Length: 117
Length: 114
Image (cartoon, rainbow over all chains, first blue to last red; front, side, top):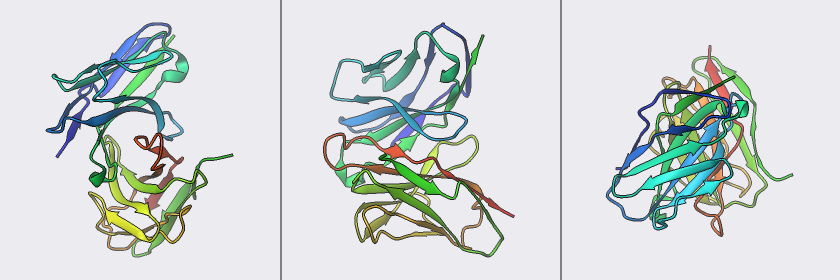
């Protein structure tokens, strides 16, 4: 079974600075997807960024980018030019490429990000 | 306006009662999912459905039931057999076509047992 570990329960960053959230996972599969979801105080889960394991290039979405290290099974999220609206819980998630698992997502326990002035 | 809706936003239940949480989507997505979120934990899968009239148990299905009579709807019933039902419940859906790797979530329902 796959597991996802987020070892930082809380992180803090000053506005306009850069912060990196860590995520490691354990799997025996070679093809899979990785995601970062944001959960603001409203509690709705919002997709931030996704990465296909077969792509070597790191995904980027505006101020958000990932550092995907497949051999190390690491998938960190970098937020540049942090804004107050970035304050939220961030969840790392894994999804098998095998459609037989019906696209089940396995989540980490989350990292709470605070953004200070 | 396309999206996933969940109702109610807050739900209170007395012990011994069954309650049903609604999840509707107008995205024409084939697959739908129910997750439970507890404090300090990530989301855990309760049930999922890939097509109408078919659904499978997830990791924590005990004490829950679902139906999938329409493509747009995937209601979750929390039965009296669920020993600790107080939690935040999230519904998600996913297309089978392009972009099929991503699940999109509704706003959630907070269930509290009194």
